[in-house]
Image 1 (cartoon, rainbow, N blue to C red):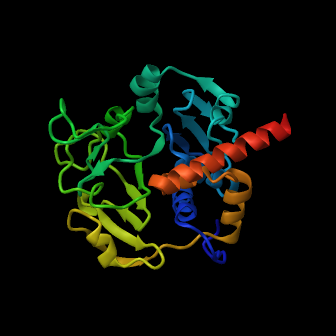
Image 2: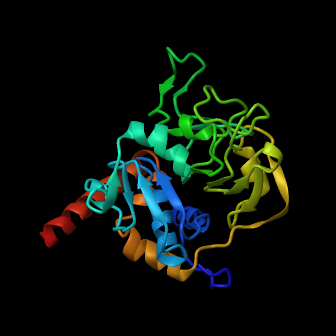
Length: 283
């Protein structure tokens, strides 16, 4: 994705987030991503198809290491990884041995995050034994966040419910003077902009087209630092959109992460119907 490429027209926020994720990937990176993260998978594959052909994926789907890729799916998502894996390992081996040894670059989605980059994917509510909402869990994040310097985050729907003054529980360690290793998250992309952690505090570095600083601050539960060279996020190129929509994710699975409620349910039904139609056609 050359920086001087012309911008595309008619892109959606899921396109932009996937492109921003792809831009964080360098050729030769070992990349990790968890379950139900199609925006991340789309971004990784886009990077591989453009500027990072030697990138390798370590996926929670089947605990496989994958060099090849296939279009994203939903009911048959395992086929993307299981049939193409170079190797498999148990989750315990991955969390206890491989993540620490190989330190992959990893994007994950926090349910809550504070200004220092501490994250929570355990439960909403201060009482862990009686939470208001039990979350899916933290996976391997507690294992890697204490030492990794390659943690990246994404939030498809930026809100004060996610960006909070204080997380209810810490399942991922942010920037802290008590750290013995690592440094906390390096980067975050949301549907409003891109952020880093200059001096250990979350800082707005780019605004997505049409978004204002005031809008971002209004949806953030703590005071944001602002980069002195704050600028607009470069939009996708026509080739980015062609790859995402025609080759990488023609079903639009990545869009599920930016939708909620009835719109998400309807899009889910459309994906499953179209996926079954394509499978039947090719069988």
